[in-house]
Length: 158
Image 1 (cartoon, rainbow, N blue to C red):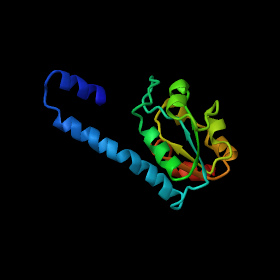
Image 2: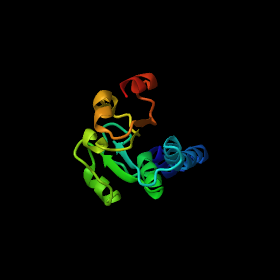
Image 3: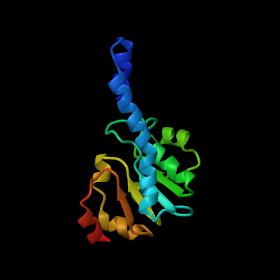
Image 4: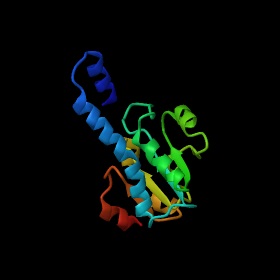
């Protein structure tokens, strides 16, 4: 959306509707972080939370405008011990989030965490083994912000 808006601006075309969409999207970013806090009974201070996947678009390494960064920052500000995994773009992830733990795999990212938050639709995260996820996590909270998984299947696997 931002690239499209830049192209429209460069060609002196009207952009108010696109600016409004970008503004609404930007306002939604921290709201999603607060939804995670709410799902964890209103407090995440001292909780270990994983975001196994930061990049929201397939076939890209760019996370600079990813909603996941704002969600992670909201959770960090609320007192979580954050773990992130990004299959691509780890150098950029390190630059943007230097103090956050960054393991080598999605399952390492969720090991011993109280909650895991799915923030990407990438294929690697559509195919997580839910039983394995339940085994390696300490807690049993999976927050699927992309609606990838069937809630009853998630509950059934623990």
